[in-house]
Image 1 (cartoon, helix red, strand yellow):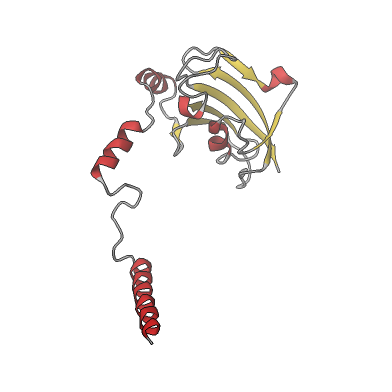
Image 2 (cartoon, rainbow, N blue to C red; image 1 turned 180 degrees about the horizontal axis):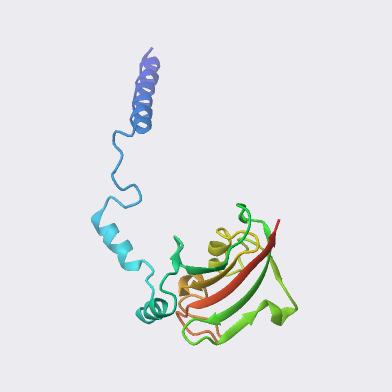
Length: 179
C-alpha cells in the first residue's frame, strides 16, 4: 500500500512539471542566454568578433553586404532561380574563386582544377563557411561571400596554403546544381 502512495505522489509531481513546462509559466525572457550573469559575461568575452581592419575593408568595399547568422557577409551578384536551396548531405556543384580578403591574393579556384567543384554539403573537410553560404543559395545564384576567420581557416591559418592567422577569405561562388 505504501508503494502505491509513493507512485501516486511521483505521478502528481511529474504531471505538475509537465503542465508547468507545457504552459511556459516559468519561461525566461531570453531563453538563449545563460541564467548566470558570470556565464553571460564569459560567453560574451569568447564570442567571435570581426577584426577592426576587416570591418573597415567591408565598410569600404561592400557597404550593403548582408549577414548570415554565423557571421559571414555576402553580396548577391546574380540571383538564382526557384525556391529550393541545398540541404545538409546534398551533392552540390559550384564554380568558385577564393582570395584573401585583405590583399586580394588568389588562393584557389575551381578552374585551376579542371572545372566545377563537386562536394557534399556538411563534409568535415570543407570550410564551415561553405555550408553556411550554400544553405541560402538558389540554383544559378552567384555571390561574393566574405568568410571571417572562424568560418574559414581559423585562428592559426594554414601553412599549406600560406594563409595567415585570422585571415578573412573572399569567395566568389556560383551554385551550378545540387541533388
